[in-house]
Each structure stands twice: as C-alpha cells, then as structure tokens.
Amino acid sequence: MRFFLAIYSLLTAATLLVVGSAARSPTNLTLTGHITPDQIFSFVNTPSKALALNSLDLGIFDPHGVGATNSETGFSGSRGWSGGFRNNFTLSGWDATPGYSAGPLLLGTWNVVLGPYATNRSGIDWTLDISLSYDVPSDSVLWSPALAPIYKQTFPASSPSRWLRGDFHMHSIYSDGRYLPSEQIAHALEYNLDFIFFSEHNTDSGNNNIGRWIPANASNLLIGRAIEVTTRHGHWQAIGLERFQQVDWRHTNASNDTGYVDAATQVRNSGGIVSINHPFENCSRCDWTLDWEHNDAIEVWNGRFDDKDEMAIKFWQSELVKGKKITALRGSDAHSPPDINGLPTTVVKVEDEKSQLSIVEGVKRGRVYLVEGPGMKLDFGVVYAGGSKKADIGNIIARTDLDNNSYASFSATGFQGAKACFVTEVGYVKNVSIVNAQQIQHGVAAMEFIRVEVRNGSDILLGLTNPIYFS
Ligand SMILES: *[C@@H]1O[C@H](CO)[C@@H](O)[C@H](O)[C@H]1NC(C)=O
Ligand SMILES: *[C@@H]1O[C@H](CO)[C@@H](O)[C@H](O)[C@H]1NC(C)=O
Ligand SMILES: *[C@@H]1O[C@H](CO)[C@@H](O)[C@H](O)[C@H]1NC(C)=O
Ligand SMILES: *[C@@H]1O[C@H](CO)[C@@H](O)[C@H](O)[C@H]1NC(C)=O
Ligand SMILES: *[C@@H]1O[C@H](CO)[C@@H](O)[C@H](O)[C@H]1NC(C)=O
Ligand SMILES: *[C@@H]1O[C@H](CO)[C@@H](O)[C@H](O)[C@H]1NC(C)=O
Ligand SMILES: *[C@@H]1O[C@H](CO)[C@@H](O)[C@H](O)[C@H]1NC(C)=O
Ligand SMILES: *[C@@H]1O[C@H](CO)[C@@H](O)[C@H](O)[C@H]1NC(C)=O
Ligand SMILES: *[C@@H]1O[C@H](CO)[C@@H](O)[C@H](O)[C@H]1NC(C)=O
Ligand SMILES: *[C@@H]1O[C@H](CO)[C@@H](O)[C@H](O)[C@H]1NC(C)=O
Image 1 (cartoon, rainbow, N blue to C red):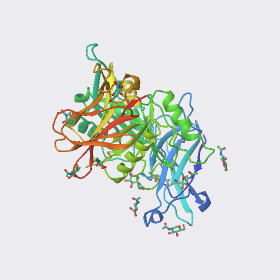
Image 2: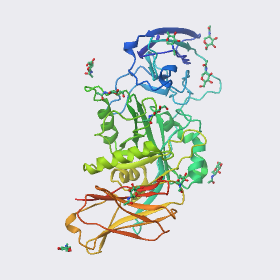
Image 3: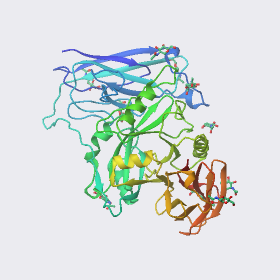
Image 4: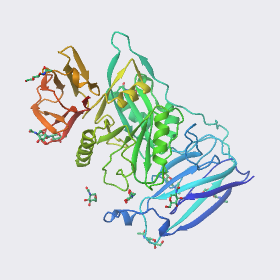
C-alpha cells in the first residue's frame, strides 16, 4: 500500500497527524521544506503584528485532487481546513478533528495545503509530522453525516408573508470559534431568533455535523448552511448552500484569476447568495480587495457597530447612488464568549414559507432591515398610487405611479429617543426623533431610492432599512 502526502502550497512549521487505514503497522514520516521569500504572498506590514507572528493556515485534500471546486457538482477533494487555528488534526473513517471531514482514507496522493498569513522576510522553514496507523477502536462506528433537518414551514394563504429575525454569520468549534454549536443554538433560542446560519471558514464540516448538536427545543429554529470563504483578499459569505456544497477559497486578485467569479457563480447557480463580509475590517487580509462587482449583499454591520461599519455604510451608499441594488446585511460574527449571535439582528421578509430558500430570496430582493438586538422593530414603507398601494422595503415603485401625495412612512418600537434619518441618493434629507410606534412621514417625489437609519445621540447606528427604489 502506498500513501503519499504532497505539499500543494506553502509554508511554515506544521504538525500533521493522519490516522487511517494506510498501513497495518504505524508509519511515521516527517516532511520538511523551506519557503523562500518570493514564494510568500506579499503582505502589508502593519506595525509589529505582521512581522512578529508567523501564522499558518492548514488544510488537506484527498486523492480527488486539489482542483478548483467543480462548478457542476461542487465537488473537490477538500477534506477540511482549520486556517491558522490549529497546528495538528486527525482524520479517520469514524472521526475527525472539527473542521475536517471523517470518511474513507482513500489510497492515492493527499495534498496538505499550508499558507502563511504573516511572513518572515527570511522565508519560513516548515515541518510536517505525519503518523499513519491502522487502529480501529472496537466500538468505532463509521462516520455518517448529520446535517440540520431541512426546515420548511408553509404559511397560510391568509397571511403569506412574515418578517423573520436571524443571523447569517457565526462560528463554532468547527472552525475558529470556542462555542459548541449547541451553545450558539441556545443563544438563538434565548433571543427568539427564527433562523441562524453557521458559517465556518473554508470548510463544510460544520454544516455536515450540525445535526449532532440540535436540542429538542430547537425544532422551530431554521439552521441554514453557509461558509465564510476566507481568502487572501478578504472574506465573503456564501449563504444558502446545498447540502454538502463546498466553495473554493483559493482566489487571488491577479487580473487573470477568475476564481472568485467562478466560485460566486457556482454559489448563485445553486440558489445561494454572495455577500462581502466586514469589507473594511482592519486585520491581516480581512479587508476586501477582491471584486466589488459580483456580489448580492454586503455586511455593513459586523458585531458591535464601529468606524469600520460606518465606512461600509458610506461605501454601500455610494454603490446605491451608482444605481446598484445591493442588500445591506449584518452579522454577529460570534465566535466565542462573550459574543452573542443575534446582536445585532438581521430581519428578512419571506413569502409563502419559512425555509432556507425563502430567506435567501428575501435577501436577494432587499427585503431586509437590521437592528441592534431583541425588542427592536422597524416598519418602513411608501404609500403611493393615490394612497391605494404600500410598497415594502426592497420594492421598486414606478415613478409614474407616484403623485404629490405619495409619502414614505416609518415607525419603530424599541428605539425611544433615538432619531430616524431618512436617506436618499443626495444623503440625509430629514432627521426626526422617534416616539415609540408613532408614524413619521416624508414626501417622496423624484428620487432614486429612500431608506432609513436609526441613530442614537452618540451617532451609533441602532437600526437600518434597505431602500425602497423608484424606477
Ligand atoms: C508516531 O507518531 C505518533 C504521534 O506523534 C506517536 O505517538 C508514536 O509514538 C510515533 N511512533 C513511532 C514509532 O515513532
Ligand atoms: C525569521 O526566520 C529566520 C530564519 O528562519 C529565523 O531565524 C527568525 O527567528 C524568524 N523571525 C521571526 C520574527 O519569526
Ligand atoms: C494539537 O492541537 C490541540 C488543539 O488545538 C492542542 O491542544 C495540542 O497542543 C496540539 N498538539 C501539538 C503536539 O501541538
Ligand atoms: C433548550 O434546551 C436546552 C437543553 O437541551 C436548555 O439548555 C435551554 O435552556 C433550552 N432553551 C429554551 C429557550 O428553552
Ligand atoms: C492585490 O491584493 C494585495 C493585498 O491585498 C494588494 O496589496 C494589491 O494592491 C492587490 N492588487 C491588485 C491588482 O488589486
Ligand atoms: C496568471 O498570470 C501569471 C503571471 O502573470 C501566471 O504565472 C499564471 O499562471 C496565470 N494564471 C492563469 C490562471 O492563467
Ligand atoms: C489598523 O490597526 C493598526 C494597529 O492595530 C493601527 O495602527 C491602524 O491605524 C489601523 N488602521 C485603520 C485604518 O484603522
Ligand atoms: C404635483 O404638484 C405640482 C404643483 O405643485 C403640479 O404641477 C403637478 O402636476 C402635480 N403632479 C401630480 C402628479 O399631481
Ligand atoms: C441627520 O443625521 C445624520 C447622522 O447622524 C447627520 O450626518 C446629518 O447631518 C443629520 N442631518 C440633519 C439635516 O440634521
Ligand atoms: C448609543 O448606543 C451605544 C451602543 O448601544 C451606547 O454605547 C451609547 O451609550 C449610546 N449613546 C447614547 C447617547 O444613548
């Protein structure tokens, strides 16, 4: 029997432990190498951080190969990824380190992928310690997938649409979080969320195991499938994936690299959406420098509202002014205590049913508003056509249907004392103090879009609607 480990791509010291059926007696081998500076991805050196640390990304591909994820089937040989979070993992037919996929240890060439985040100008020496053994525990059971059940609740024809509260961005032990999925689920129940999407970095292993972590009292919580695609040029969210769908992450910003567009197209073609995460985040290659043209949504609010989110909102506004219809999303990005999912909350209007599909569709159509947390509710619409029609967030109204009595109407609960700021393509047009549940009106005429931000006395964002558009 032969079992090879080949190095696909680069760098630094790693300890790799593979336990499998490769040999009857344990075989240990050590591979070493040196990465020269020209092989290292160039890096913007922020003071101290970048040069002092050599952080290694680690992942593995089985003999199905390292080729890009196939756009037809979504299949590639990826068997897991732990980024810079781990320096070792195990893989067997019955178990795997979280982030990795248990299953048959196929005969052939396996590729370890190593990638540096921070670089050393002298280059980097790496070592892989590999241990192969044939050691089936007497109580072992071959691994089988445990996905979250497919959730679908059909609404009665008498009330076919609903606003659902949730979170599209959170992590667990299946990538670099310390939360168990069950702990994230418990928080979602506590905050009365209708849906959550786990989004582990570059691995489907969380999605494929989440079913093991769902308590009986979570039967009303929709658990959707997402992956946070973590590249050298920022992070994007693939939301609403098929079962077992993988997404390629090895894109660069080289002008001849179509990797991002290919991966984004694959996600869209399978019914999902593509969102840029924390586009201006100030950490090693977390900010988005890849492609601003092929995305459905943008995470303008990541965790606690800060300056980077303010920049994202300004950028989003400039995209809206250009005539793009990109949905603003938020994500808690909750990894570990004390982060809590649902802080802040994304609220999506769905039609006919509560399902992954209807939620994704709601986001595609911009039927989304964002609030800081529980107990906060927004109601925004445009009354037009002689008062006979009311458009909702995300809708497009024909300008010919407007008359001099058309107006935008806004009310909010849970924001007493904050101000509602009406925003159009010319910027802030009107600020009004919010009185609980009291309607605020603003006339609409020749404009491209109108949306509302809710801000408090410190100018901190507490809520935001996506626009209603005019055409
Ligand atoms: C092989 O590696 C494993 C894991 O590091 C270790 O427990 C074992 O002692 C090693 N065996 C030999 C023969 O070196
Ligand atoms: C950079 O690499 C050199 C040679 O491998 C090593 O001696 C040095 O300690 C490294 N520096 C840092 C900051 O890691
Ligand atoms: C392997 O990884 C685990 C968990 O990340 C860590 O606790 C342990 O120290 C690592 N083992 C070695 C030999 O580095
Ligand atoms: C759901 O059940 C888990 C234990 O299975 C418990 O810890 C949690 O408090 C329950 N949550 C609610 C909202 O009932
Ligand atoms: C590619 O990304 C790197 C790092 O984010 C950046 O420094 C460089 O300017 C980018 N190149 C292009 C052509 O966008
Ligand atoms: C892109 O161009 C670089 C050199 O400019 C070349 O090394 C690389 O192979 C090209 N990649 C593709 C996918 O054509
Ligand atoms: C990014 O962070 C570094 C160090 O934490 C800081 O020096 C720098 O000013 C920050 N840049 C921005 C644009 O916030
Ligand atoms: C709106 O009012 C202006 C005058 O204030 C008038 O010229 C215009 O015809 C009115 N438009 C509609 C659609 O009623
Ligand atoms: C409305 O509030 C926004 C956000 O705080 C502020 O930038 C703007 O200047 C205000 N506009 C008016 C007319 O007060
Ligand atoms: C605005 O909201 C932030 C975040 O909730 C809070 O820290 C701050 O104290 C609030 N400011 C005012 C004036 O209420």
